[in-house]
Length: 301
Image (cartoon, rainbow, N blue to C red; front, side, top):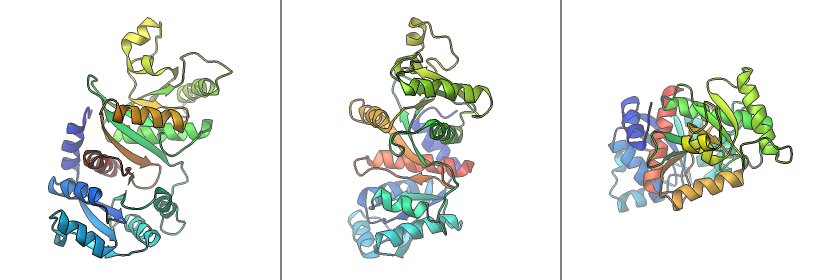
């Protein structure tokens, strides 16, 4: 089992390199992360976008762009669609967002002709390496699905399980996070949590162990679970934390990044290939970790 980002980078190197199609690659932070991944033997890349700007940034960063294929497309939508097409035709394994709005690249991913749609929900999986814990945590969904219904939550869990298994977690433990650990009809998230656990027990959700509802403390802390008398195989041992809404996920994600300075990565799951979709505010390290996560997922797929 891969337990930290040091392991993620190590195994990505062993299972790579994979080729990344970068959409609108005229972005200095993205190019730095791509170059580092290339130097580490994790990934190769095809750079799609404004060639003149890509070369200007490459020169500023002393990156030898002769090592890369560059496809000159200045229009953001055309560049995004081309990057997706490179993956759908097998010339690349991973799509990565460069200097382009998320909505534009996702529209390309969902294109009916060259896109990567599977019919499943697309969801974001964030991975955190939290000091003091013996495992990585997968937080979902903090970026894509605003207020998912029960069926969408089921697919969000299934997507997160794919990501966890790519990191060699054979049977990930999924905690459905709510404000409290008891079912309350006035709190719909707790009712959904109970239903998701039932779906796991009756075989509708497979490849993992689902429990809920859990409050965050008794999902990640064995001591907190014992203190509240919770006896469940997921209690205190969760790998995947499935949040009820995008607000809860976003607050948890940013709290861990900005208050705790926790190492992290992010990926979009549910398409035919991994989509590395990082924020402009994300560090170069986060972008590199996200590339490595994408490589591990591509290796499994």
